Image (cartoon, rainbow, N blue to C red; front, side, top):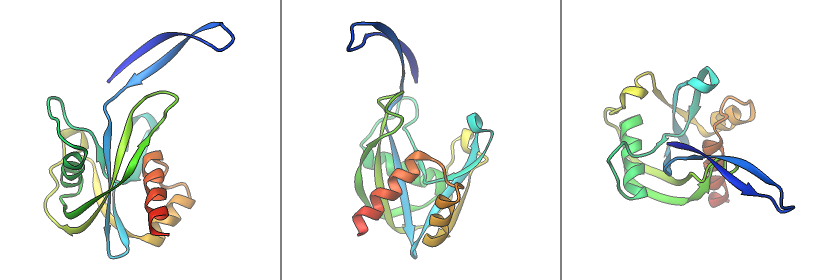
Length: 161
């Protein structure tokens, strides 16, 4: 991740500074099973609390691969599941006023359980299955606030309708 400050010229000719955070794209996985979802919860330092979200992340330093390979890796790392099927639902941008970072959204089905292989920074993470109605209640009640999770859920809902 890098932070840069660009000198810009606005439409009226005035000059300014625009701060940009450069981060690699990530993959977000929606693990779907029995009309519900497997979510992960972890402590988010900037917010000072624990929050639920869909599994998501980037390749570690020096690793590369396709978005599908990244999605499969994140699913296994954070939940232990292996997906029999990974379907790409789309590509979205997050916080596009601050970063060009985007993310690929995948639906994971035909799940086979296994042991999570979490990174050291994810050692406090936990995973839990929730029925769809409970996930929707968590969204309505502001329990799930992760923008990427909410956008991914909307993509899934639009595909299903």
